[in-house]
Amino acid sequence: MVKIMIFCMVLGVSSFILEPVATQAETECQPVENVVAVGRCVPAYIARHVLTTAIKYTGGVGSLVFQGFIPSHWIGIGTTMFDEPSQQKVTDEQVSQLLNLSLDDKNFHALYQKLSKQNKLVPFFGLKVPNAKIPGNTNSTVLSP
Image 1: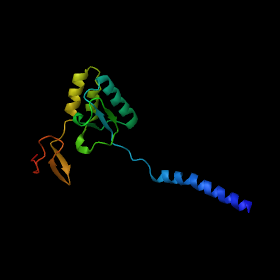
Image 2: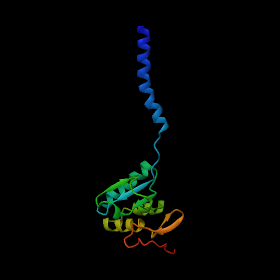
Image 3: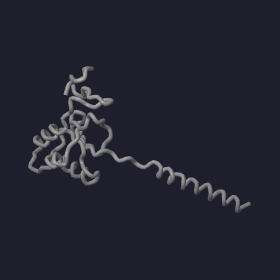
Image 4: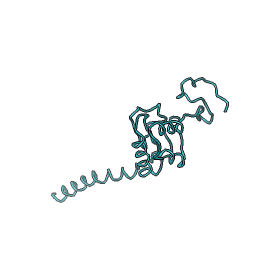
């Protein structure tokens, strides 16, 4: 009788231990897109550090978030809280331009704003429709490219 109780206890405890391991294997984390968001009041030297950190830990910077969508002193790396129309894809060369040490705060943010400028048209079910995130661009007609 004691042997059966010990066996049941061992079996019960091991099921609690093994169940989370099995669940973890099934639900692997999905990689996030390499997005960086830098607020307009973040000093250039901090923004460059953020870009360098993003490159180091996420494998690169693939897109930038438009500064109008984020608080002025806010920074985000690999964040998924912005949809695709909020982001602008950038090349490695464009990111290198932002890493230029000769850029002061004003010139850094001017370049960042230029690189993260919103597209007037965004994809929507295979069509290009006006980007509703741009003020005054919310009409219901499709703009011609």
